[in-house]
Image 1 (cartoon, rainbow, N blue to C red):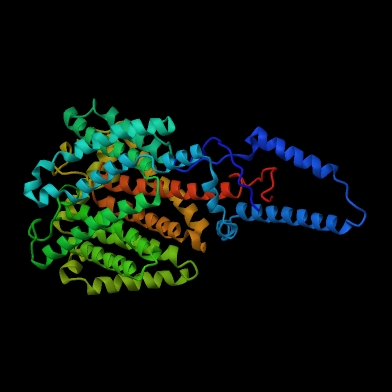
Image 2: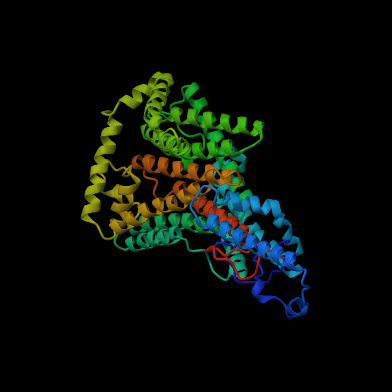
Length: 529
């Protein structure tokens, strides 16, 4: 039987939302006395001469126990495909999951508090996301009084979050690499204000960006369960489907509000520009596809499959060339990740899919993709060259946030997120921004490799690949849009951090239930009793 003796220890840095396990080293004095007496009796009890068979059986049992522990440790440390599968199998076979009911009432209370911590803060994030993505006051004029609600909800959420976070963990935030990078990016933005051509313009842009960073930090700390992460995804997917339906309907009715040739997003703010709308739609397709693969309910699978088709149609309706390239990039990465055993077929398959996609697309869409010398493309290329020139002339702190437009030849933005940061905040800020986008890939690839062919962890496998594809799609699409200070990438990186921390907490919890420390070295205490 596996021991149920536990005692309180310090939390693992990843386990900020899981109950803490009691270590066997701090067993109570009464329990230790009983164990000592039992050991004394076993040592003092003489064995008879005909007890040789029992001694052999005991020796064989001890040898089998040692072999079991060594084999489990080897599997836990090796990078093989069964690294986590064996762990889950052992937990199910030995019914370790029921041990948490044997914890003391204080430990049970602590577990509940830690797991359900930041419930109010998460509610604030959920409401804030609803207002940002749906903007109901634009769809329904009678709700115009909600136009400033997002600010007050964000402020209240921040206050509740700080108080709760200090009470739970004694720190303002977890500090993964991405948080450090975004804080450095924020610092460079603040330093660029005094040197800006219009400091007030730069200050206003900085305050808007500060809101994005604060919500990003709150999100990575309050999304403490898989249910919360899935709820956010479902909420954003609902908004994405509405945007796609609106785009397709406007295209069907020839409502080309942008220069008489392209549609506008049915919801303003983030999605008014068709290129920004296409960027968002592309980044949500892999997430919907991951939920399709991870779901076991046939009806839910059909629902997510229809969602993927609908969002793809929305991308086409935007007539965005950058969106098309981003869609191709995300699709190729998904094919490369999922087709592990048939990667030689990826190139011809990808070409075939792209050709069929273009052939069956509307005629105007094919014309749009084949046109690279129109006025829009020429103006964008001119601003690209101009922004690179400005970045080279102001390499330290740039010309100030949102001040590039004052240096543009056409009084427009850079239409490139990378040169936007470099020209407005300096070369160091551009490095921080690029590293911020790339940082989640390492953790996502680790999750992908550890959960490949592990059935109990397939949901992590699919979502890790999906987020890599979403980030890749953003990296391509943002080359054609000035979106460095907007919500898109910060939500994606926050999703990636939350997924990584949730996965690590699950692994650490299962290791703790087997009484194995994270480094794979067994404690002296036997896992048998």
